[in-house]
Image (cartoon, rainbow, N blue to C red; front, side, top):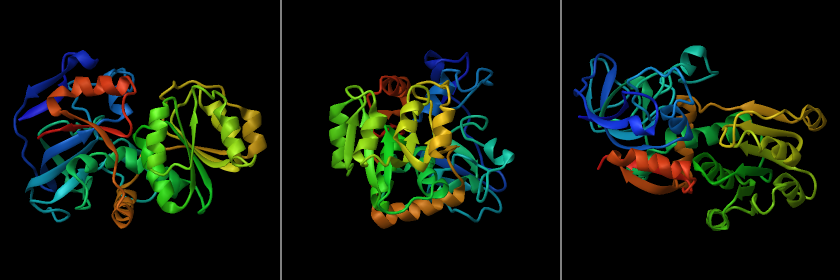
Length: 337
């Protein structure tokens, strides 16, 4: 079978399609024939060596994938041959509060990821998915969708009519927009592209802000709320955006710290935090129980994950370069077809 691997070093130029032996499932394991994987910014950092400078090689990237169970090992009961499944980001976080063991079970690093035609996972590390979704759409759920779901519904305590601000139009924020609309929240989304903002409006965004033409977008968001501030911010930028998020946030509001697209270092505005009582909470994906609850909501509301670009599995480097260039709206997918 073929697999995407970093073998000779870190960096996109070292990401190669290699022939490797077909794996076989052991007791409690399942063999999955992968149909699609989706890219997350984490994968780009990982392949580039930023996520873990001491990354052990060889490395098989990607946490998010869709496939069909082709064989099962002894004792497997959660799934059966022929079931279509999604990988789970954390292979050992099933429910409840996160544990260190669970946090150390992420696909891609430290566990070999889903970027291969055939992959063996613990039966506990996959979950069945809604039939109405395409393989490409399913491949977007494990990280981006679940991160947005957890941030909005597990961590924040929002009510219908509350206002949420979503930064940018990448995978997490677009899922956040879709989930927020389904839950009855008022939505504000930012982007540097008017074209992408128009696409966000078509998905139901109530208000849009171009942060390039309106660099003080935090004040603009507060103005939209009549000065009260937004109740929730999906903070994916990090350095350069957190200050504006704090300008936008309402008293006792919730800022979900998810990404570092604009950098990782940002001086905290301690005075503003104290004055607003804002809660800043880091978010690292979610548990299997959260994933399965999310899938029920997806099916109920018939939410369609936004897949913007699809590349052949063998063109992963081109897909990563598209991500680097910020060309996408929603998710980028690699197909094994």
